[in-house]
Every structure is written in C-alpha cells, then in structure tokens.
Amino acid sequence: MTDNSRADVEKLRMQLKRDAEKAKTAPEFAQRQEWINPQLWSQYMGTQGKLLYQSFSDEELLDIIRQETAVLGRIPAQREVFCVYREYIRRRFGNWIKALRAAGLKEEKVKPAICANQKDVRGGVI
Figure 1 (tube, rainbow, N blue to C red):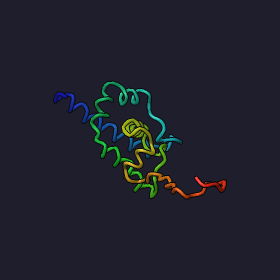
Figure 2: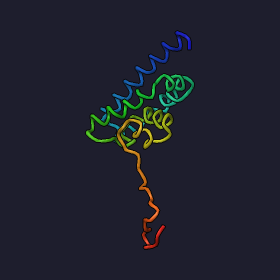
Figure 3: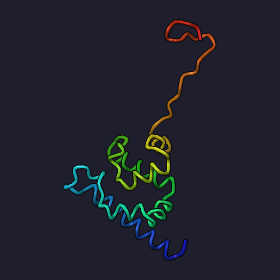
Figure 4: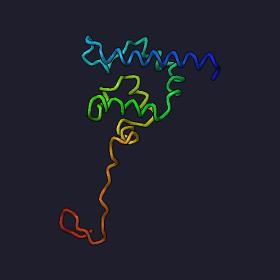
C-alpha cells in the first residue's frame, strides 16, 4: 500500500467513525444503525472500502462490539451496530454469533457427552 493509499484509508476511517457517531444521534432515523446513504455505502463497500475493511484488525472489529456492549449494558443485536461496521464484522468472522464468541461475549454451546450406558429420551439404552 502506498503512502497516498494509507492516507486515503485513514481519512476514510475517520469519516466512517464520524458517520457512525452521527447515525447514533440522528433523530430522523427510526432505524439509525440500519440505514446509510447509498453513496456512502458504495464508498465504504467499493474499491476504497476493500482497503478500509482490510485496515481493521480482528481486535478492532471485536472492540466495536465490546464498546457497544458497554454502552448498552448488554450484548447488542446486529441492528444496533452501525451497518458498515456490522457488515465488516460479519464478513470477517462469518456471522454475528461467531463474532460474539470471538469477542468473548457468547459461550460456545457444548453438547452433552453421551456415555455408553446412557438412556435416550425413549428409555432405550444408547
């Protein structure tokens, strides 16, 4: 990445942060985290957006979820995280649940071990 590209990505990161903050406080958006101007969306998801996405480390993306958890006092629903960040997080981790687990906010479901003499729900031995 060239110095110009790095500078462009940093500018875009700052703009993204401003847009995310603006979306949190905008009273005209009933679904303020869900919506973004289509031109901004293409900017964040287009060619420049690919560089922007790649500039975020896993921990930075997970910290976005952790910060929202701290603000809300609970684990945020997907719709409660700014749409661009949410898309980057899902893209990086595969889905929202995997991201929550990676952030240490949701435990892995553990299936109970089956013993040799354990009975199934119908009463028969497995």
